[in-house]
Length: 366
Image 1 (cartoon, rainbow, N blue to C red):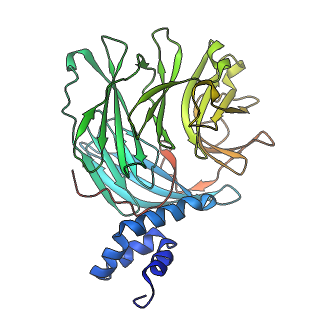
Image 2: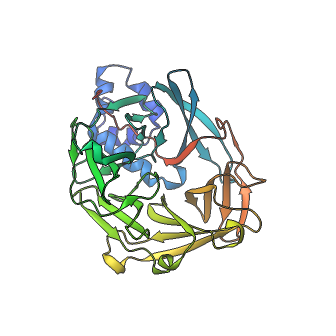
Image 3: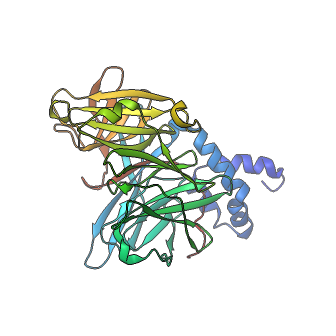
């Protein structure tokens, strides 16, 4: 390697698994500096994102103690037959009560409770605790309802957390943003007139956060937040959803696109789920293009499942359908369900997200 041009060395290393590169860092100082080089980190991540069929999933499960909880992370790669093995990769013990895990972003995982936020890269075994916000939002007028989102700002090469808090006295959201590496929370103005409909997390898709809120008329609004320019926008969703009386909307990311998941309570037994995929995130107003796919079960309710990923015309569902497991494949062509046979899943209670292994560092403890 010492006699090869640097660009050739980078090209070779960028194609290797993270596990191997982490071992190489312990060889000597030169190898450590080489593998920590931001150019290699970016090249390795770009290469990993291009291998869409070889991208994996990450699971997290939790074991509670008297005062602390241990969160276990598992790597999962599914075969073409739809089965696989969950392999333990990292465990960490933290002080958390009820907590939420956010979808993986460039190999980083963010999880949080009402008063603590953590970001970790389980593949390189790094974790950082984010400082608590000291921005004054007139605490007497704000309830404790809050949710967080985690995403990447490609214009500044920064990872950002958005924290949304619901006011108990007026229909607005308090919003703060934290940029990893700055150590500071900033108050964001211009939040829309709405309330958190549920404590679902915002999803990050192509430089935007999206989440479902409620207007003063109790109608559901799709709100976006541009991670780069830090501006809010109310996004029109398919008009037919506005006329429904009994349904439940949520947002997920599938195949790099924002998707609205519409659980139809007007269908008999809650057996229908419509997935609306937005194909043009950069369109404006009514110009955005939505494509609909539907999941229908002949006998069982679908209100306890969540779409996780879409692979070769099949949607991976996480949740519970009677007679099937906690991970289920739905074939869009044949409109059939089958159990994803996965060994090593920690328990019936776990979070799962698409995930690429990366060398992205969370830096020193903040």
